Image 1: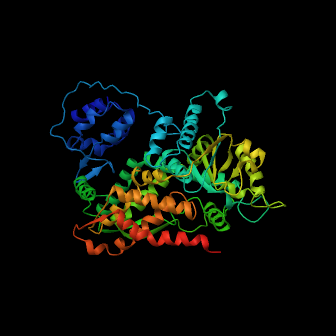
Image 2: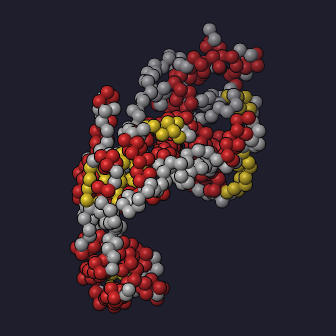
Image 3: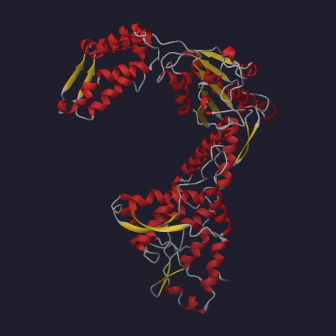
Length: 546
């Protein structure tokens, strides 16, 4: 009965939408005397593209298909989006619309990286020369974590990771393996130095800080993941907010669309606007006191916010649109992200997929002292429950370390792995020895990796308009000199290449502007020997100095 009061275009609209909520809202408006008297004078503009997109869901259709009521120069209702079409439909027969349920995408796995061991080794080969045993051990350990997540819960809880101990001299790639592993794995990863920690009860950091740092990394990863998922929604909200500032709330749709096109083109980035931004929006989560707690200042601020006495939470700033957009996106993302959900998923990710790399573990092995050392054997004792599996209390909640992977490394120059506590040795069952680098390994380091030192030098000097080339004999001479210095002075591994190459390119880098304009400079074996000869002479004399 009420539909007979409406004009044919609106009747067609109700048939298309078939939405009870929209129908009731419009019906309440048509029940007034004023709406009935002017109903035939209203113009109903319906988006033709909405009819093609109605099959998704009623909620999407109600957002996309909106009606603009225009009467006496006013828009009604407020906030309705207007569309224009060439002609309105006059059919009275209802249009059948099939509403399909919204498709739900499966949640991504907590561990995004599902590379096979062979693929992991191939990736590491692009950046690290040699050390195949260490690469295989790391690849198998990472793949076993993925395999464990495929098991059923009763058996999954019983499978524990096999922790790794890497032994080798300095400069052979132990730290580089950890650095590349951090980029490769989508899991929370933290690298620490064993010498930073002391025994519980002494001044310094406890080993529990390792897990607390890992939790912070996991929260950052989870927050970034959720920001990426909300990226499109955040950008749309910020764009509409900027358009409200530029055009105003009462602006016509054509005006807003004109500003929108200019905004997307970047033509308005230099225009200054006033925006309301949260105070200290970049300091989320509060700072730490080094032991996982919250500092007193952050606690007072949180208490003030909870009691409503923290003062204004936003401040007005005059910024250019180009500078205001990332700040507005940051504030909008923080508003949409649920902090509790982030912490809950981050804690679960840290417990199931966390990787801890402890470097310089040989420095906490002291075989010469006769008493207890707070930074040596005491740290080993504190590491025992951490690696075996325990519960660590953090400001975000308790975290279990039972299924975290621990990778330890050390040079063991002045001690042996057997000098560690027997309990700690048993908690590192996989032992990998990294071999010292030879002259051929030095040559491969200079040529095989994608971002090798030779390529870096050529790219840096190309910014000056200078072309530098290294002959193959010159590269082999650099490798020979580095290996010789390592054998005569001190073996520091691949780090010696940095010293030798910087000495060779010192004069060229200082006078690079003289070669501007595309001039070529050839590095030859004779030039290499000329530049490094003082280093070789000093190495011969150093053995006679008392």
